[in-house]
Length: 113
Image (cartoon, rainbow, N blue to C red; front, side):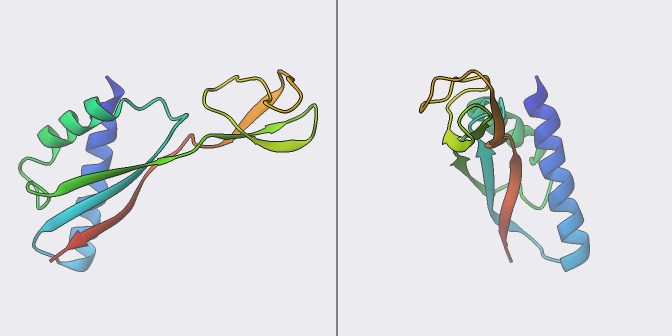
């Protein structure tokens, strides 16, 4: 399950921020998860519950925002919305759509005290 590795990465980001900014607690962790990133959000939330248990973010609320999938169609040369990797172009039906956005997962910000 790669969601545990992602949760540990989030913990690492929080710990780095805490060392640099000297805050005492994290109240909210806001994540952006791309629709094409292959992340199972429910599994990630379970893993975060475990990973953050003994950290400054142990009581933090986790908010997840979805980043829409986008791709570049090489056949009709336009940017298109896509819901899955390897989707056909919704405009021309072409099969050569390269994903350009929605593959990422990132910590948007932390609300701390």
